[in-house]
Image 1: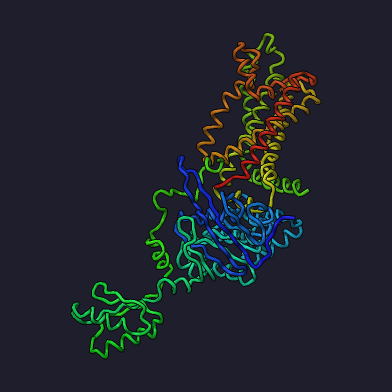
Image 2: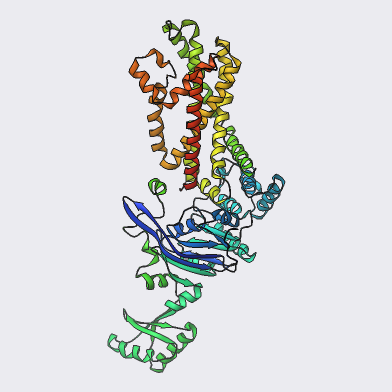
Length: 344
Length: 253
């Protein structure tokens, strides 16, 4: 009997490593990655391009062997029993994977039969998915004639056809227009509500923030922060109030000192003639700050309130902004191994 | 039986893909027919002598043409594989429990049928032109050339997966095609050439296939050349299936 792990853990990885050879130089795409994902949630995997997201996903989906470490997905050992993992997971890759020269229906029926359904079962399951994803009007056309949104729907349908316990989505909304993006988010939430664990990579901050129940931030091949979006934002930044009082710049330090002594204010800083206050409860703090200034007879020229973002978390951990992190020098396209690396 | 079922499913998928693009079937038939119509008369006029007796030009020429067809039917596989890597189809199928060998075999079986069916048409037309049919030999020859197609098809898929660029694949395939076919004596038997040419031919596995095909087409089944041809071609086919399957196991877009 294969060694399996019983749930409640949907994904567990420990010490995963993978390096590629790029021009005779070993580049580590995943460097000792640890990860635990509980079942029944949407788990976001956020990081800049080249951070190792896709490589990690490929290891977890049995596409790529790891150099070291261990991983269990849906209770099966990825390294030693990949065939067991394949039966329990669904995968929608960045490239999509719909066969353009086959019709939508043929794509679905073939996929169903590969998971062991009989011809009759395969057709009835395909019909269900055509209904669910609204593919009816074009199910008998070859997939190469589909629009981007239609194609993506077919691809997600292919990924969940066999009711996988864990669904992997690699940058699922890249290239989709806002409407299709919103639809996909909705479908992902419905899958989660139906008990499927969804693991998705993204480099969009808003996607990670709004869609994930929990998320891990990855940079240079390792997880640098993990938690619910709210926890992460609260832990590293909290809300920020910026007030610009009508005073001479010389009076600002004294004012800052007074404000810093108030409750709910975590830290203060003077920047460009304004005072920036990191606070715990933005609504109450804002009112308190205005009251304090009014008491001193100081007018306010401008005031603003900023919600914390996941980018603040990334910035705090790496010193870089996720928006411009991109692919750092020295890590050229580590997620896209070339033929030699694969053959090695 | 899962493996046979999966191979059948992948074969069906590939066959549908081909039938949706009938232009390939037509061009696949046009080349051998053009050879028959335009090159055979030329050959006939230079024939005479022991290596190529004037009355048996077609008997020598048709097995060569069929080998060329088998080569062409098999070597096209890599192009589609690259397209399927780029569109993520192979990656998707690799995450399913499907056998990688079945995945390879779907294309191999399609290519074999895309050799056998047009091959029969061309042979029929050649018989009309005066090609002498030895039925048992012909049947065995088609079996031999089906193995040869399987070798070419799996090799082309493996090359496509490893090279991953249409340009590189085209360079490799066209680069080996000419020396391989010339040194197999496809159009004219190497026995017409000088010793050094025949020695070079002995290093080419395809040479043994062509020699065996010629003997079989002539109705001589129990020659050494036939035995050697089957052994070499079957070994090449088996090796290519192994290489192709291994390539699919590691394929990465």
